[in-house]
Image 1 (cartoon, helix red, strand yellow):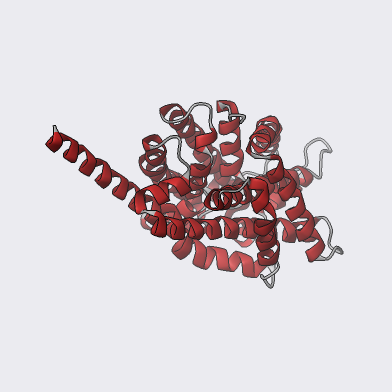
Image 2 (cartoon, rainbow, N blue to C red):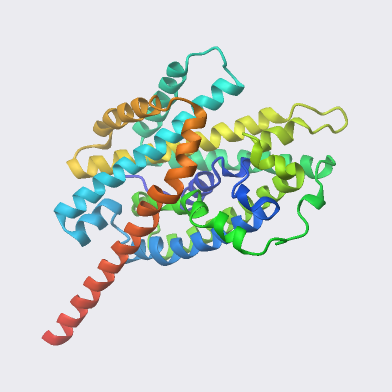
Length: 367
């Protein structure tokens, strides 16, 4: 089996973590301090990622998340939790499929039936998953330079276009740190920083596991955290209070760019949006397929259509784009996602450490 290189692992993590999050104003409740809230959320997420997620991987670098759950909790509980994670992965992919489809209808194909767009997205993602994990990670490595270049161009054009108003940023922490913390926790751990728990399904495919993969992952995380915070800072400076009231603030700001006759930059934002959302929904699709195939002891291709059917059906259950957004930000980020991103990984690590400590104690007594 082909192994994932360090470059492929890093590239996929960047595309996954940045996703579409750089194009929206995160922690909008913190208003002008939203970018500081992103830094706070990134710091909290880094503690979770480095101390919990990567510790789990380094303890058993050859195991995936399902193997960790069944190995530490025993098969009955471990299998039940594995199915719960499969549903979590499916739901995360469903929300991205629906977001992709709704935004396509709004900005590109307003007369195309939503069901057709959802079907096409699911089929495209199924094709990528069918090709396997190596192809998916190789695709990320090939596309990442173009994504970074487009972001760099957009950041430069925004900076020199005269759109930025630094009075939108200052004074910093005018209302104290409390609104910042409230806006950052736990929402910014749930999205986007805590989502890296998914990579416990992928780390064991890396050619360099354990400490090597962990070191690279932490560097990638720090880059993405600063990148997202900087994008948020630009949105705050350019849009002010309108940033949190606009569906797509980065798209709105891009439409205002006019430099030496250069206009209509928003298609570049659309490309970044669709690329980020597609990579994320496919990553969750792939994670659910790998977990299900491991539980049933079959090839991953056998799990593609059952998972794909769930994604297609689930994507059509939301009544509208705004219902999907409301449900996600009001319920999922605060109550549902932390269970899979924080509670269960921490509990898994505690059980693992207790078992390791008990095993060490038994060996010492036998000696």
